[in-house]
Image (cartoon, rainbow, N blue to C red; front, side, top):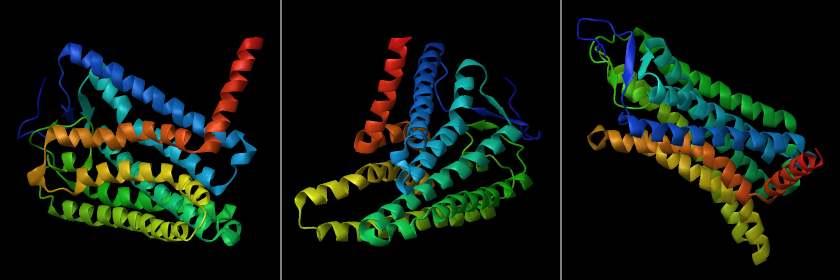
Length: 315
């Protein structure tokens, strides 16, 4: 395979994030194909169940359906190309790589903000139950989702547009399975300090602002729960938040570790593992977690599956 040298402008990149021994390729293809298929089916089921059940028309499930849609988008940014790498080619075009980077930044930050919005929704429901309907009205909920996408779009554009001015003329080998921002930036022949600074500032702003909303919301939620005298009421109240807390820990834990740790602690294997966690495993875990931990969703899925089973039996 031809690799661009120092005198040639790079027009494509080579993704070398995994072992490419043929038997290993086949095994990894099957593993990630099954994960992706399960991600699509699981999140689509969440969307169908919420949209088709009148009992789930509350803001909590409105945001959950958007989280499921985001998980489909987030996983689709990287996994289809990863599957192509295993069965066809490890090459990705220059523009294809930057497009993947843009949508990775867009969907990743949008997911962070949707998780923050869901935390605020739980705060309003538990800490201000008498005003919940007024606070979380339909218009406000839609504006929260629009705001999450708008801020994420600006964040992605601020980071991707300066990359277009960079020159890539050296190695075109990316030791990763996708075109994540740090791995692409590392291959530039030109000075990238302004890009790195802009990324750290914007990433820090996105991570800090969304995480701050989550932390403040849960501080108030925990304070309210502790004031409840009934043990059973405490358990039921906390159970409405437990699934969201698990998803937040998985997403923010792996994402922040991947991007915020120093370069001296960098390792291709570790970077790949944490990238797989938040970009591939988290989207498949979310519907599983919410299905198991949220009684209403679990019951709605059972009804849906029961209807399908009955229809198949009749036919």
